[in-house]
Length: 194
Length: 211
Image (cartoon, rainbow over all chains, first blue to last red; front, side):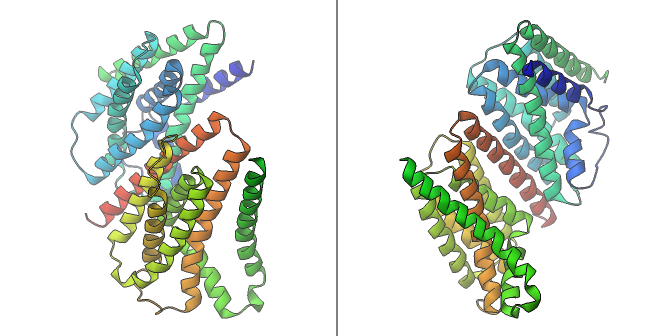
């Protein structure tokens, strides 16, 4: 029962994310702008939730290793973006991240831990870079960084929460269905529909 | 085993309690206190209420708190030594001082996130010394040794030390009280967040410094 309530809450939060406005331009500010920056874009939301879900699907240690790896590598990508170091095709990488991770969940791919780590790490650089490029002049970098990281972590937790549905009867269909939806979001971004 | 752990827990509670209560009491009686006391208190607060110090000391505190108690105690001595030695070296401060402190915070976070792997024995004391040293360099902002009143130096040394000890104590106590795997994982995840915040803040600092 608790798992169902948790899953419904997570689903509501995830679906409540705004339109893809994360990349419409720089949003200077502090904690709030950092917090909402990853949340206000379907491409980011889908990928970060997918990381948590895939981790839950793979089980321990991927369950906690992927959500640890993602923000650390993402921050390095953000640093590259802030520094203005060119990194081509990041938007394609972001769209691909949703598509690939969604397919992994849909097909229940049990990749080795190191493979999962490399896949997630590569996509994390793209996500971090995109954020970093757009926010070189945040008025309060400390508050922005905190908000940015916390919201990313919470999105992973949403994914892990959804992944707990695997423990209830029929839950794996919901999880794999969500993976399909995430893959479709990624494909739509890749095709330029969204 | 339970006895020593309990005693160590109580000692940590006393440490944390003193650290929290003392500045509060000092503030309440500020009007009647000496100028030196107020300077020391203000200096303590100033030396920890900066993003760089918060990020670095919290990262170090988590690393020390997740380490063995004996190592954490030894590292605390080295941290204090670094803070004191930093006073003598303060004229050498450059803008890179803050950045090197952030890098140290990043190293601490990576080591905490990589648990249960233990870093070499010398690592934690060495990091403690380096964190203390750079913290004093950062907080004294290039002032030569003893060019500021003694209470300011006192605050610069004890502010970061007390904050680091509070974080170390709380993390250690939580891990002693709750031995479930998810608590340790929680600290690893939190360490990855502090690393990320460190890296992003460092990038902003480098950008604003024109590097």
